[in-house]
Image (cartoon, rainbow, N blue to C red; front, side, top):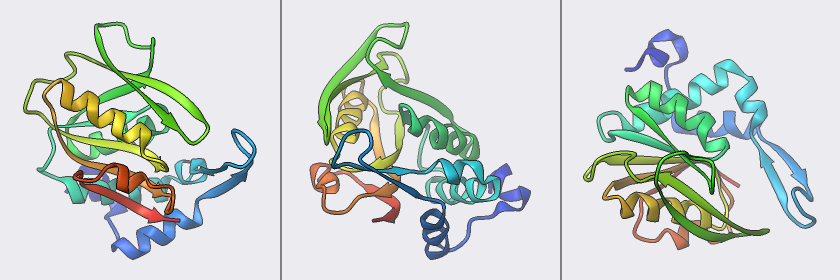
Amino acid sequence: MTGLAAGGSASADRGSVRGLVASRLREIPDYPVPGVTFRDFTPLLADGAALATVVAEIAERFAGRVDVVAGIEARGFMIGTAAAVGLGVGFVPIRKAGKLPAPCVSASYDLEYGSATIEMHRDAFPPGTRVLLIDDVLATGGTALAACRLVDEVGGLVVAVDVVVEIAGLGGRERLAGRTVESLLVV
């Protein structure tokens, strides 16, 4: 196992990890716009043992299956970078438009409260690279689908879309039909 697990934070069974995530999740009503309930996982990030457990669980599930982790801005960076370290692989940022310095591929999408464009460096990894996409929350699936399109466009292979929290009923999983989607907690 990775250095994280060897440090005493070995992955627990999936049910206890779900419970841990649920206990560290904060709901913020009417954020960022009225009618949206934001799922904030910064309490999970602030708890070192809980964070290590989540990262070890991700690393255990994907060990030997991926060549790189791609994290979606901004909260996907937090878990994604830690997971990449736990897996012993590199990390690729998928950022909001205009934030990356080298030539990029881009994809626009709609989300539950607006629209956005994300980008990834065109040379982020060679064709055939096995990519784990990580984000904090799967809601409508627009962001994740756009990220998959970026990976596909440069010839990468999306092994899975992995999220900390999936919001049931918003159609995200359905929009990613044909893709492997894994979530630690479904609310």
